[in-house]
Image (cartoon, rainbow, N blue to C red; front, side):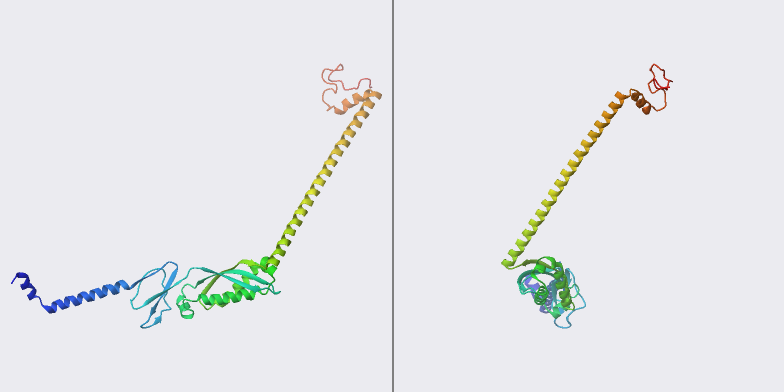
Length: 288
């Protein structure tokens, strides 16, 4: 008998069974350990559901990351990012005109309350938002005329829809961020009427601006004409003054002497330093 056979016969079967059992248990523990880790993605929150006791755990909410839980429990996650949904509705305005509007509603699951949201509405909570949003849109749009919806009252309409939805979402663990009227489509005949009205409005504004421009040009010409007339009057006045002065000189030679004395500042002689009377003489020639 070989040495190997002798050693094999000496092994206790009970020990072999013990080792195998320990190996199986270790493998099971390893598998359980590996299965006990779960990931929560960015932008999500999760809560634990305990099927064998306790049910949904509402008190504790988990953020993004890797979480260790017992493998028989379940981690349920919800997206808590802001989300937008567009609602296209055909609504009658206050006068019975059909209007096609597209309204964007921006919302999110309320952070820290996803377990409550799950218990009240479940993963299909968006159906609750759909029903409330469509009802609010029809209710608010129906209070106004198509002209107000199309232009002047858009922000007021958005505010009224927001007010209704905030009231509806309260207590339902849904957060409303904003409402926006993205588009308004009117019947072709009304759309054409509005286009023609706007076109005429622009034409009227253009004509008004042209009229103002013509008025400015006319006023400019008047001012220019007034300026030319003043120049003519000034030149005529100067010519008359020169003619009068020449007449005075021809009729009275001493007028020249008088003009010199009018310009004299009291220093030296009005005739200058080199005059025949000398610098200190201060009498008019021919005057006593």
